[in-house]
Image (cartoon, rainbow, N blue to C red; front, side, top):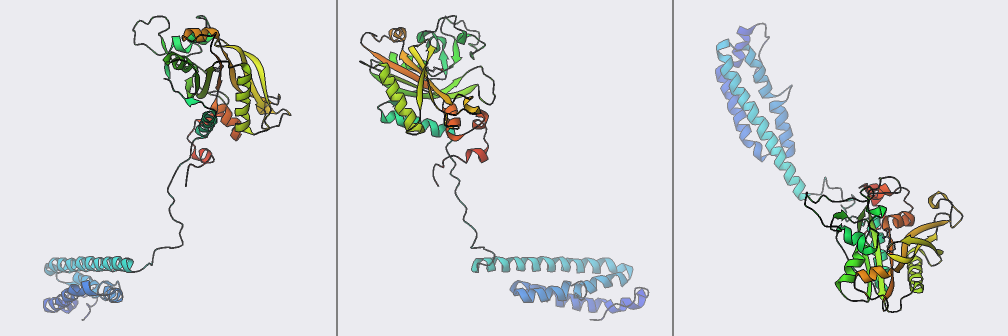
Length: 371
Ligand code: PHE
């Protein structure tokens, strides 16, 4: 087609885009528009350049020439050409899209077959859970079963039935988290609190039925303690209770030593130190040789070469009587340990607070469940 002349001579150049020649050009372009849907990628590129190209595009030239038309024709011609341009652009984009979809469906281009597969996320057990499961498993193999009790406990079961005198400092608001009874009056011993240890479950087990008993009791306990590198206001305990005919302190030592060596290694040194709990007599703390220094003394064991891992003792006669168990016939031992402390030793965790955060970089270092 003929091109418009210089814009400085609009009158003359307008004759190059006369109505008849414009209609012919439009008819040609409309026909090509109808064919877009059948073109292959190369033909589509060529058509796009020929029609819409910035330099040689036929439609581009026609649109430029609109400026040279007499004023009264410009609006109509411009609108018509613009509609056609938009229709072309849409048709080309559409066709290109369907060609791409078809190409993706029939070839592996764009799929990187060397990429690693997406792994299913399986998670890990928490280090404290690993320790609890393992400890429970060791006692299960020795004939113990698992018992559980509530975390909101009565003052009677948490303290009084366990032979705490009513003025014992552990019963103080300062040490224990009491629950608000909503203004209701509570009889002595019926005040509710967050249990400070798992020992009240000993009472529940003994009051439920006659001896013998061999149970371990995992659970969460609460104390009015700060949250610092070695304390937390909520932590786990595992309680143990074994009552039968003729059970002595020798059984306590044998079972707990066996446990420590299975859990921490066959050559683990063990010692029992005299201690005090209101619900056991005699009472002891069990220490194991420090795993960090092998007994030489280091900061985690405070230079002693030993680490305390549990409290224990022979169940106090008064506690047995409080549960209707005849101390002349039945005797036994109880113990309580803290899985967080044990996990810290076992895995070398320097700050207890790491066990309470959700940091996956820390948590994912411990045994995977599967996968
Ligand atoms: N309940 C004691 C504590 O929390 C531990 C313990 C349990 C001691 C059983 C002796 C016997 O410290």
